[in-house]
Amino acid sequence: MKLSPEDHRRLYESLCQAYTQKFDLEQMVRYGLNEKLDDIVGGETIRQIIFRLIDWAETRGKLDNLLNYVSLDEERVENQELQTTIKDILAKLKDSSLSKRSPLAPLEKGGNDIKVTPSGGNDIKVTPSGGNDIKVTPSGGNHVKVTPSGGNDIKVTPSGGNDIKVTPSGGNDIKVTPSGGNDIKVTPSGGNDIKVTPSGGNDIKVPLTKGDLGGSGSNFTENLPNGVKLEMVAIPAGEFMMGSYESRDEQPIHKVRLKEFYMGKYPITKAQYQAVIGNNYPKFEEQDKPVTSIGWNKASDFCRRRLSEMTGKNYKLPSEAQWEYACRAGSTSKWCFGDDESQLKYYAWYGSWNPFGGAKSVGQKKPNDWGLYDMHGNVWEWCEDHWHDNYENAPTDGSAWIDKNSKCKVLRGGSWGINPYYYCRSASRIDFFAGVNSNDDFGFRVVCVSGRTL
Image (cartoon, rainbow, N blue to C red; front, side):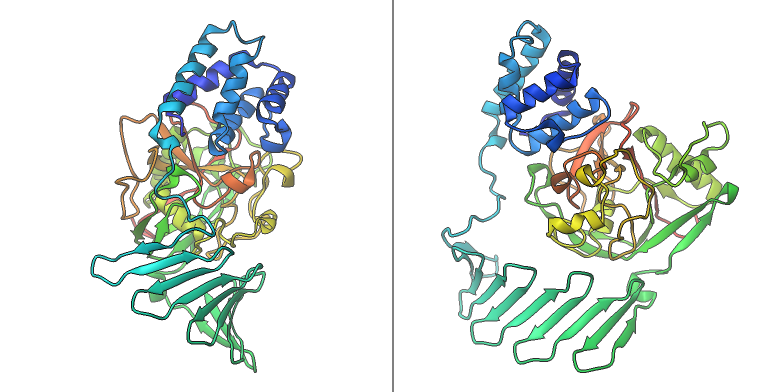
C-alpha cells in the first residue's frame, strides 16, 4: 500500500515523537523487520532516518510488520496519538484493494500461456518456458524465442533458424552477431557520433546531424556572474515508455512523446545557486557540490524567476516525464546503463558507496548516454509535477501534471543516503511537501524549454 501524503505525515510525526534515540529505532527495526537499520537506510538525524524508513517499509511491503511491532512496543503503548495513527493505517492496509494482486504485475516464470489479442485480430501467445526463455507465438505460426543467456547477452531465435545475439560489451558498445559470423559493433563515441565497426576492419563514424536531435541539437553554456558557468545539454525529441512494474505508483506504463528541450548537465551546484541568488544569500563552502536543503518553492523560484530573468530564457524545473526520459537516455532498463546492479557504483553516489555521507561534487561518476551526470544518486531532484498515486490519466505530451489541491511535489533519482537498488532506478519516485524546508539530500536540476531565445 502507498500511504496518502496525510497518512505519511501523521505516521512520520508520530514516530518522530515516539523514537528519539537511534538505539531504540535500531531495536525496532531488528525485532520488527528482522533487518539492521544501517543496512537499509541512512541519515544524519533521527527524523531523516524515520522518513526514509517509512518509504523503505512501503516499497518492500513491510509496512504492516513495522506497524504491528510498534503497536506492541511496551514503551509506546501509552502513546495514544501513535496508537491511533497505527490503528487507522493498519485498517487501511487490510481493506485496501491495492493490497490485492495488480493486473499489471510481471509474469511469473513457468506459468501458463497468456494470450494477447490486438483488436484487429491475430492472437499473440506469450509463454514463460519455466526458465528464462520467453516464447512469443503469433497465432499463424513461427515463434520467436528471446533468451537471456545468464549474462548480458540476449539471443533472438526465429523458429526457422539463425540466431542473432545482441551483446552489451560492458561499456556503451553493443555487439550484434548473426550466427553465421562477422560481428558488428555499434559504439556511441562519447559525443554525438556513432561508430560502426565491422569485425573485419575499419571503423565507420556516422555523425548525428542537428536534425537527428530534433531541433538545434547543440549544447550551450550560460555565463553566470562571478565566472560561474551553467552547462545545458540538448535532449532530443522522441517518445518512450514511462513507468515500471517495480511499484504501483509507477503504473500504468504509458507512452509519452516529448519535444526537444535542454537540461542541466549536473544538479545545480552551490556556486551556481550563489551566482544567481546574489550576495544576500550566505556564502557556501565546497562550491562544486549540489545545493541542498532547498524546498520546492525556492527551487521553482530560482528557475522561473531569477534564472529566467537573468538569462532572458525560459527556465523551469523538469516535468516528471522530462526527467525520466532524460535519465533513461534511450534505455528501457532499471538504470540508464542496464539492469546489472554491480555497475551502479560507477554511475551513482549512494549508501555503501558513500561511507562518509553527504552530497558529493558533481560529475565524478559516469554520465548516461546523453551526457547527463548524477541522474542516479547524490541528491534527490525536484520535479514540476504535483504528486499523484499512480499514472492513471497522466499527460502523454511530456508536460507537468498539476493538481492545485495537492500539497506534495515529486522528487526523482535517489540520493547519497538511501537504499540504491530501489530508489536510484530511472522510474523511482517519491513525494514531499512543497511548502516546507527540505532534507539535506534534496536538490534540483534545471530545464530550458525555449532554447537560446525567450
